[in-house]
Length: 533
Image (cartoon, rainbow, N blue to C red; front, side, top):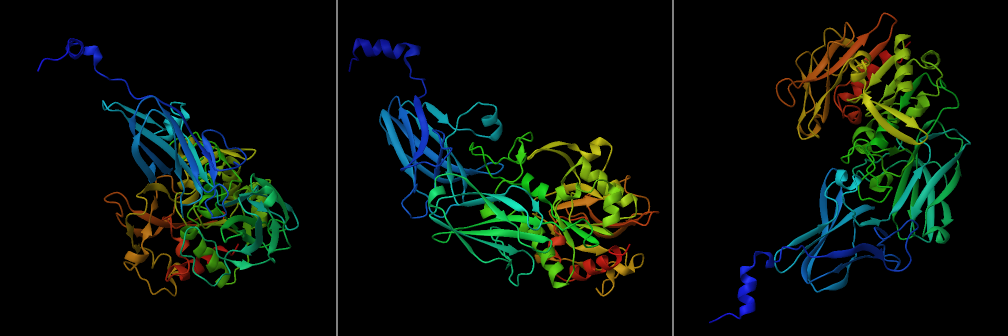
């Protein structure tokens, strides 16, 4: 068979082979009906709750030629996790594909598109990483699934103070009620649930006027004892959101013991995406220079990151053992004009959770408190690791304290060594039953004995002593070689000439196990010793 002359010439000309990627334009998102305030061509808000308003996202694009197209919707943390995709053959022209999710968490989701033409040429739209996006190398449509998103503007308030509560939700009616965390008699098993005891009557709010935009509610804080509280917000249809806050004591030193909640670290780990680019506004989403805004709602329906694992157990231990303490947010430590004022107010300051990010003022006053004989209890690990700077409501990461010639081991006794994201847990081995018998009283533990087993091991992140640990630091217990040779977690204690007593657990989840034996008795023994001036 003889080919037509034109085809023969075409076949012999190298430039005639189609190597041009398919043209894809006007890649954007929208929603059915009225949008939410702040929506734009690259951001659409939906609320698939069955009320017929903003139930699905409309993903549209225009092809310059026929192509096989795959659209994916992903959630991001440190990388991508595809939650939905659709593939098909599409002709030249404009097309719209709808995503109508069911039972997906409230957050933002990235939309990406890949088009392959008949010649196998490929066009991909959508950012592959936060770095790529923030360099301006890609424009990515984003779909925001709205829940009951709420956050207090400040981490702590005084009794009788007016608190600002920012709420975003699509509902006609909202019920608000305040709870105290800690006295509850139920076990918290899910990371997106806060349990507590009600301290106010339910307040029903008409929300029809605000269902299409954010709204700030002004709430007067009742006459409540110092503690950790949260607002529970229930939308019509049963959706729930939480917004935690601390009630400060009437004055520093109302009780002689202060418990400081890790409010800076909670926000540093908060993957909530406020600017709508699909990536969490956190240092852990791939760009360490990302500004972290304080006062944001948290993901997981408003529950602070790792709250169930690191904080709930200690809060319940406090209430079960009847301890009366002053609760402080990290900013409240800075209300003490100097470390001298802090030392006049408290005999003991407890850091029960993960206090990784501290300002210079916070470090200064706590160090001075210790130097004047104030006692410190660190029930987690990787504390006072990064210096941060707070300007207004923005938190920025500066440098590691050890790189500023103020290594955290010199204050705490140990400092961060390593982590494995919790893949391996280990048991503590007692090393000080003879040198610090007061710690192990009533536990039945002796030197060489272990506690913490497979289902209740310790680790995640670990601390160890260094040459900068204070002279006389005692290793109370160890989790030997938890990640291999050279990676041993150490629980420590030291005293100073001024009378300060400082304890550090050495593992990230020690305080969270406060209600389990023998940790419960160990912390009680610590409390008896360190709460005394």
